Image (cartoon, rainbow, N blue to C red; front, side, top):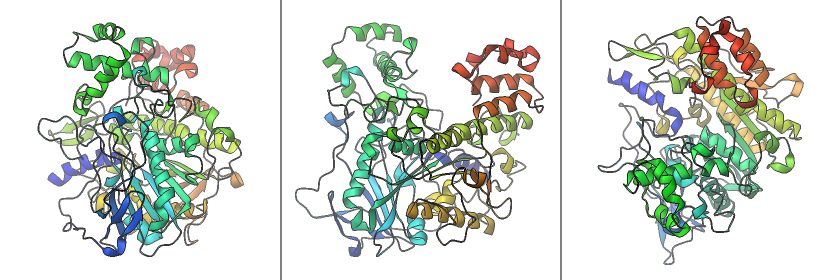
Length: 603
């Protein structure tokens, strides 16, 4: 029974980027320094180790100065080698950045709210021994830009099986990664952008440009890739003029892009701001420490505070004090503004304006993809959709309704994260846009629960296939059947990923043995479907999703047993100019009139 419950927990958080291991794991590998790995860098002379599969590994490399003290909410500064010189052992990944604990992270120490430390700007590197001018793959982890760490991912298999150098990094998260308050401004647009997590990734790329050749990597062939929030951040590298020339290809797994304006990031909620804008967070802090009685009083109080006092107040708060104002449902993620359109680090433009004009973004070859059943990861434990039979066996309450929600949620994600971007980028003149849909859904049943249906091709499940790693720090043996079909798909996907990293075209994979992956629009094709040979296999399709198509499909779908569900999906999917009141009210035989669309929250 412990294995079943462990499976549920592991699956629920697979996309957030934490280490997870089975209860029957092999003895833990203990790193031992290897003198063959000594490398001179701008961060000092580094000593790594040889991994279990032969890769050379360096973990916990400081790529930027600690963003602590007066460097909090400032652009990162380059790390410098220690004055006394000497050899720095890099055998363990560096601190995670401050975040709420989740089911798969280390628990917070007694008396603490958060895990991690503000001194967290570290990276890990994995390289095949003796590599020269190898393609570099620079990974940005997921986790809603509020949880996760680069050290949870191992690039050993990609390095050894495919001859690439893999870099994973930490970047500032949440309050410390994206936070803009007028009292913190300095007059320097980098420091005042609020995009500190974005700037950390750019600093990491700059470190790679200066140092990766010493590790066998080619600084002129760098691929940024990331999943979920890491996919969003990858698109931010494409959108940021400060990242120009620092990378040469991009892979976006289950991403999307929507910059938040500084006004929304700063203003109170009742003035159009985000529910957790800097003004709202400041007010919650003042209430929490007893300075004022409620948040209305907090707003009035801050109007009388000087700029200096406001700044000192914010700098005086510790990570635990910030995160204590948020509730933690176990997943650890917090709804905070991120990816700010400040006009310097990131354009103050719409997504379409950025990516449909080559002058507005770094036009490089790009892969864009989503998973067929993205929303299931966030739904299958939700008590609105799932009940526990006998107190512990999960069962879907309404399978038909569940699958409808998954269907439209996934279509919306695909349109936002893949097809709309592909249309924009190709219209800008980019000939090297490749898209995919990940369809693998061959999970085993667990005590009568069909994981292939309840989870299917869920958010995050493609990561282990792309890294070709189902053990190590991707040990998810409870989920995957570990059969030949699974491993064949992993071989194919990692071959495509690394072929793209090498040339900017996934083509027929690294060894020329895969189904040809055509660019968007070539021979009338759009996306490649990635599935195992035991199911559909791999093939190209002309499938393309538009917002108009989603709306038409929803309005004419005869698969709704409960018409109120159609209303909810419409209200959740179509907002602002896309929401047409007369259209909405005509749905469900008029039942939608009784459902306030502003109160709908399905997921």
